[in-house]
Image 1 (cartoon, rainbow, N blue to C red):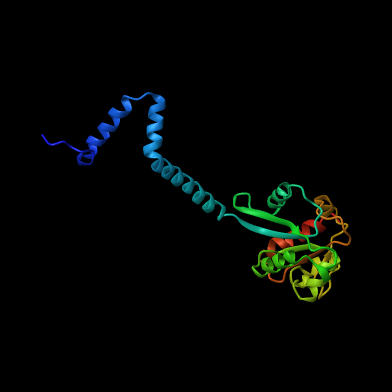
Image 2 (cartoon, rainbow, N blue to C red):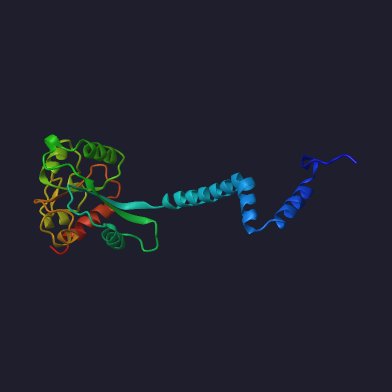
Length: 221
């Protein structure tokens, strides 16, 4: 009778042979055998599982969107901003929409003199604002004046009602609010310099929330 090679066996016969080999081994032998012969398969399975989790995470994260995006220049706050972001999200967001969020970015370290401003920060600010990724900028006087000259900011009379403008002493052409002494802003502890200006980007996307944020800061003044 001709000798049968393993390659000649059927799939079922090969599986039975594998079981026989494993049954004759002790635990360490079984583990070594499995690792030696099935290592590519094991890594393949692990890779597929990791890929599934990554895709699920990317899909889930893509559902989140900002209802208000705030940039803070030369911030002194290096603490966790999440509690403040959650507080503002609860204030302005829809409680039934878990994907809404308020974003606060304190990484804009321009320095105090814009004539020698940090290059990387300037490039980031230019890119973010061009992509309409910022609604509000909170900044010191030099940063405000630098970008006001380049017409980065909205005339606040186009955003706020006539009554609100009268209440906050805003005239046509004004593109910033002095929020230095507003109690609610001071509680946020985002900056230490004075004066502090709030300006709205001319291409801001979330105007309703931006307006609500201004009224929120001014409310207890």
